[in-house]
Each structure stands twice: as structure tokens, then as C-alpha cells.
Image (cartoon, rainbow, N blue to C red; front, side, top):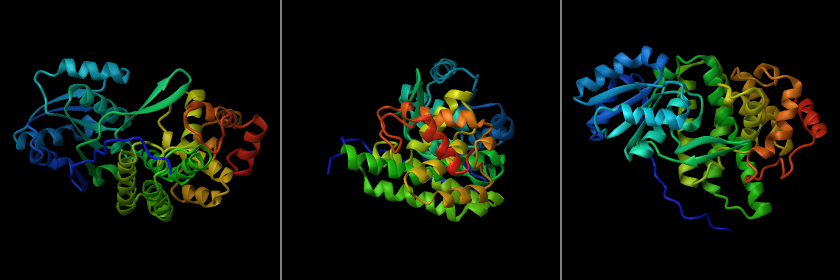
Length: 351
């Protein structure tokens, strides 16, 4: 069996999951011997949680400075943040969604400091992964930057997220159902390294969430906690595997292609979920189980529910393979023809 290239496995030192984690953030950081922290967040999380974070940091004797996301590209935001800091910092606390957490990873990488993840929406597995997604021309890629030293998941905060973000996180986890199949296919046909441990763990996360779909759809704290733990687990699996392969395959390529056609959206995971329905069909897996679980979780199961026309869905399917030419999936090297794409979307009731 081909060996993976050597890679360093860096895992979080601490993962805190429960209620009122936001109010205890100062004590948690102090226990990690952090004295000075830069806090990157955006307008809404700052309005909702900024005061509680500030009070907790003050009570624990930490020096801190807030910086609000100014909407600039990640690299520019990183440089603005570092230029604005009035003193050297021991770490970066990212408070918010995927954009803020990605930028926080880049800031920590450039400054050589620690990254702490405090997600406010359960929308994808980036809350615990070391990856940042990048766009280059017409293709997508991801690169390793900074594994969070700690992940702080406040269930009382995350359970209060608008359901679109819960549905997005659910779709992102469900995507592992086809991602691991794509990975194994690339192993069998091309000899690519395949990590059976991480593949099985990722697949179990997807199947477990299918069993919890109704609870997630109801927005119960128990269901949201299971979802958050699955997202954290999947992010950690990326670190163990040294690749995003166990968590990202053809279903993600469909989502990236739809972003390219429609413009980057806030429903990445929801698009991944719809993509998983179709890619499961191609893999001869149980696509109806995938579709039903998404429906139970009150997540989209069709292009129209994503705000995409039938033609946009078909076009995204034909473009998907080209989004990451280096990543072999069930779509093959050349991708799907328009006719095959239309038949696939119709057969799975996506259009």
C-alpha cells in the first residue's frame, strides 16, 4: 500500500464543549498560560457576545484587544489586524463564522502565535481543522496553516444559530459519506495514499448524523451538540490524515462549482448536502437515505431550495471535476457531460 508523505499531526490541546463557554473563556485561556490575546470577530458576534467575552478576559487578568472584520480579503484582513495590535500577543481568538476563523488561522500563522477557535455558528468543520480554503483563477484548493490550540464550543450559543447555519453544518458532515468513497476510489485506481482509520471515522460521523437528523431538524440542544462534536471530530481527522480527503470529495467540488457560477454563498454546507445526494447515486450508495436525512434535518434537497436554477445545477455538475484537477473523484478526470449531468440531477430529484 502506498505510504503517505510524512506529515506532522498537530491536534488541539483542549476542546471545551458545553453551555456558557463564552463566559468562561478568560479562565480557559489563562489555564493555557495566555496573557495577551488579540480577538478577531465581526459585527454580529461582537454585538451579541463581545461584552461577555470582555468581562471574562478582564476577570482572568488577560490583556486583550478586539479587531472587527472589515470585509477585506483574508490576507489584507490579516495584515490590518497585525498592524493594529498595540502590543505583541500570545494568541489569536477567532470569534465568529468561517470567514473570521480562516482569517484568524492566517494571522496566527504569520505572527507565529497560537490560534483559538470560538465558533458562533455550526456551519462547517473548519472550526477545528488546520485548513484555509483558497481560490486561484477557476480552481479551488486548500492549504494547511494553523491547527487550533483550543476549540471552545458554546452549545447555548450554537443552538441559537439561524437554522440555515445548522443545516449547512449538517450537510458538511453528511458530505463525508461520499468523500471517503472518492478517496478509496483514487487509492484503488491511482494508488493514492488511503488512511483507513480516518476514512472509517469520517464515514461513521456522517452515518451517525443521519441517525440524528430529526433532532438536528428540531434544533434540540442535544442534536446540536452531536452536530458540533461531529464537526470538531471531522476537523481533527483532517489533521490526522494530513489531507482533507476524508472530509472533502466530489460533493464539495459540486458546491465550489456552484459558487463559481452564482458567486460565493453562505450556504456551502447546504450545497455539499445536495451534492452528496447526487454523488451517492454515482457511487451506487444509498442516495435516498442521504436525501431523507437532509429532509429530516430541514436542509435543502434540491437546486431550487438552494436558490439555483435547473440549468445552474447542471452546469455546476459539468464543471465540478475541473475545480480541483489534482483530486480524482467519481466524476473522473473529464467530468460529466451535460446529458449525464442532467440525467443525474433528474434521477435524484435535485431538479
